[in-house]
Image (cartoon, rainbow, N blue to C red; front, side):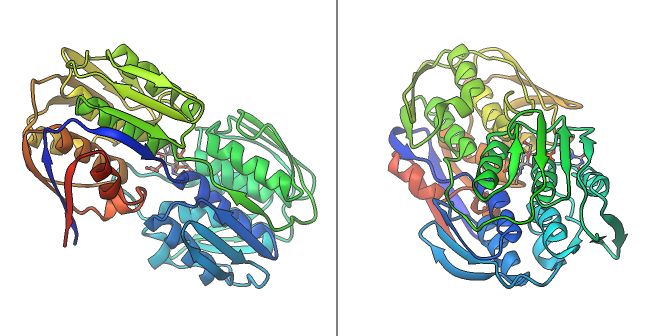
Length: 417
Ligand code: EPZ
């Protein structure tokens, strides 16, 4: 198992480019199942979750004609296997994104229930209810979600809770259903808007993707597509915070500033100078940050995927900051590890009270989930002394070449076997 070793305490300086958005490319890969032909995806991030999804599609009968340098070419003409096996799905919850497309394409699906994961139970009940609303028969058999349909029918479906992949799953299934589907309380994440626009370019009839009400008129088939994945807003946020937490000056380029507006405003409130350009954001400021409160919300609120990283920053702030996690029921796995580095954090239910300290000290810590790992890296970059972060496979799921990018910014960071 690889580890990452960091000698912290150095202000980071320089420019870092953002890769394609992991949470945009995963539903786009699943959407290839809705077409029958050659699909080309450019600027896909070279991260573990993308190869997991590509392998899952090959398992279902797709042919992977190209898979390197961020270019993925998948021929889905001969997709014929409705089963997504446990050993693949358990490593990545987003595998459930093939459920809707398989039902729409093959009239059947057998997808393993996702294993639990560090940040909470993360059921898929909203996905199942949505597909049942479209007329699918769903049962749970030996840990698998088994679905069949003689043809999906448009329906009016209201999401009890906002669900990003739930919205993507049902929207994809509805593109080939018979009649009109209306989704209410839909997720408004940019990744959903991107998927809707892409599907429309393939012949779908979707209006409102990216808003809380999405209307889909079913069509008979969709054409294969070519697309370019937009920049990863969570990766951009992570590197922006790295400039803040180390008291340096970092410019994040090839990003979409608008996607991380809530973070930019909070960084300014904390006392940093944040300059926004067309496709770049620059942060500077070497005074100790002022503590600010955050509460995570579905988009366009403060993203839950940035909560752990921002908390790392607040451990060094002047004053007390209240971090409220309202999307997941257990997304404070990073707290215990940050405490090992000297942070003063008290957790009460879904709220963390962070009392800023003068400095953190390096320590051996363990990553638990993707964004908690990023939080530990950020804390280690700011801490005095050496940190060793184990279980970095969590990082490799969603960050492309993280240690290279941080080295470019002057960090003393090594990956060791
Ligand atoms: C997506 O996960 C992202 N993953 C997550 O990013 C992100 O944290 C999350 O959205 C919230 O923004 C991808 O897009 C691949 P949800 P998703 O369904 O869709 C509950 C990362 O680090 N819920 O929006 O799985 C759920 O338990 C990952 O890149 C149900 O109760 O999240 C959670 O409390 C981590 N029943 C809330 O809704 C369901 O059927 C939001 O979950 C589905 C979800």
